[in-house]
Length: 307
Image (tube, rainbow, N blue to C red):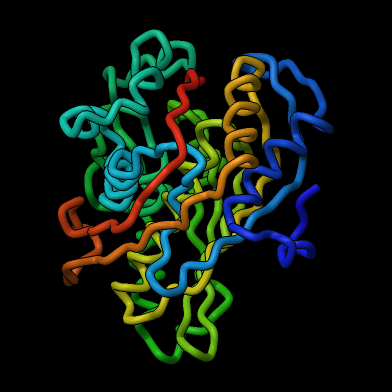
């Protein structure tokens, strides 16, 4: 099983992910979950160096990094309206925004494609009242806690920069039942060392190893680079803790092919990221402000996403 103690044996950082696939397939426990049969492993972790503008876009398969970035910028802007993603040809939340799915969550009051107070709402308006219109916050007298801006403000302040309290949480027990989907990546922490290097540590309660996990790793690596850029810090590392790492039954054969291909070939190195602009507010970044260089991958693999 992969542990942080044997990382020195990893020749390429993505080998952590390939080894995790192998471990779950060999030793994982079979379960019947909410949305299908899985094999699962409890309590795993990976870590990725972000120095020298490194960005962990996995290279054992082709990843839609622009889709990932668009979703992240949507979170950063506090949006919960799936129509905004659809306008950018992003459809990863479509099944969670249908009338049928919302009704299954007893969210009869929400319009289709209104996802309720999910990630963006909690990041930027934690615990604010959420009404049925897309992303509106009650009477605007209480906009909740802007967790993300508070973290940025404190990281920009020399007296608070090295605090151990830079926490961003999406898990809000009071509003879980108002969300189309309870958060999977629930809490991240931001830590600065004496060299003004920024590390992000993420706890994820549940991860679909075939599709979700690579996306989540990339999303928080992107976020770490953006926050470091915004605060005049240097990105150091992304550390990923996972409570329940599971593989869906119908993903197994595809992941075996991906694992075999990765084991029989040299994995391309991770690409580099350059952020071309710096704005007064983190809300203002657009996809065009990011340049990704030297992204190569071994092959393309298709798997069905669960809702």
